[in-house]
Image (cartoon, rainbow over all chains, first blue to last red; front, side):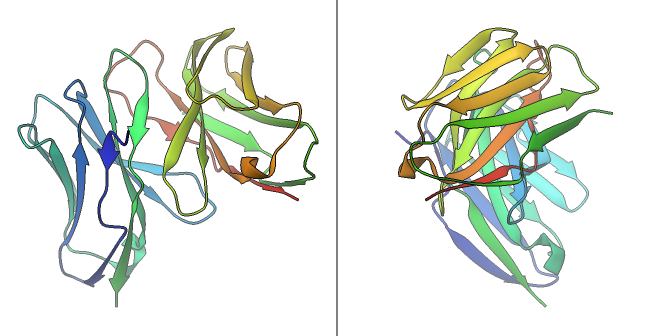
Length: 112
Length: 114
């Protein structure tokens, strides 16, 4: 049972434009959500997170939106840069369990 | 600042051989520790997590095991490797006892079983 889903395996965006990566979840107990960026042969790097009490969190070019009623979150990258090309994972946790559940990832390619 | 070390970076092992991957964290006490596996083209699968010394929770039945002999040391082991154990293994930590805290990952071990 895939509790966290990233339905788009890949996405290509022109440099300078907005990248929107999507993630859906099924477990209503999840209360903390995260986005990670991963380059090949490296561990994921934490990007940004959001608590379930918020619907938006911004950090520089990265903004995460949470729609609890739809059980959906998205990551917006504006403007996109070639260095943003990587695999992006969303993750979710029920803070009472210490377990983090990851999606399958979306490969973002930013074209120069 | 906190750092996480994971080794070796790559490992090639024959089927049926034993395995020991080690992970250590510096700069924090009583972290939560995790082992994940990423199979080729797949997401991150949680294998084990630990909230304290000697406390191990297993998520997926398999021929792997984990141990936490010291507060900031987490070891992934197998007595006999299978072909299906190939993958990219990642260790991670998060603040112990805290909620709404991100995980931080090591650089991973690429394990190839021949």
